[in-house]
Length: 199
Image (tube, rainbow, N blue to C red; front, side):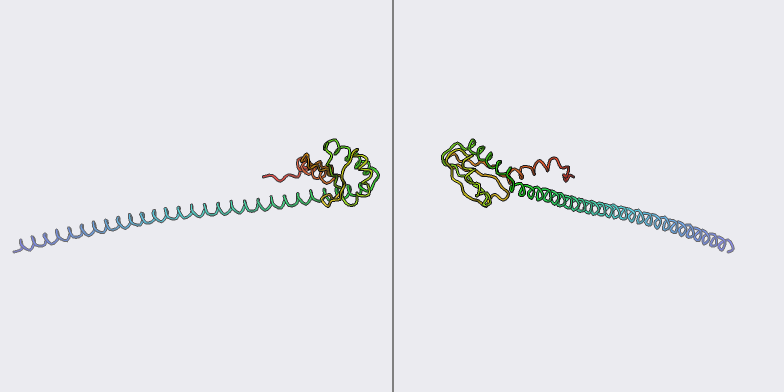
């Protein structure tokens, strides 16, 4: 019987050893599985964090770009408005100087030269010369300088001075006004003043 007990003990020990090995193996596999799953979750979390960070960075870049664009646009608009103000100031001063000039005897001589110029440009018998109301006092001198029969009437389309000649037969208009000459200088001023808005 001792032999049977010994065999049973050995058998139980073998079962215990096998059970211990299986338990260790299962525990090791569980640890490996747990570590793999943690690594997988960590990698997934890092991937999601990376994607989120990239999206946030893109959003921030877009927002900064839009803000810079708005600021640049506002700056250009402000510069444009200021350039326009300077241009208007310059041309208001020029208009004042021209208005003062219309009170001189030289202006009357220039009106006579303008009448001669309109006469050459509009070779027709139906020409009407338009003057501002303040220049109607010179109509006899202007008519004489024109050199032939013409109509003369006042108009409010001239604010500084000069003459507009109109021929309906020819379908032409000759503008010899200080207003139009000043306005033509705006383009020159824009090109040469150095006050351009760029960018």
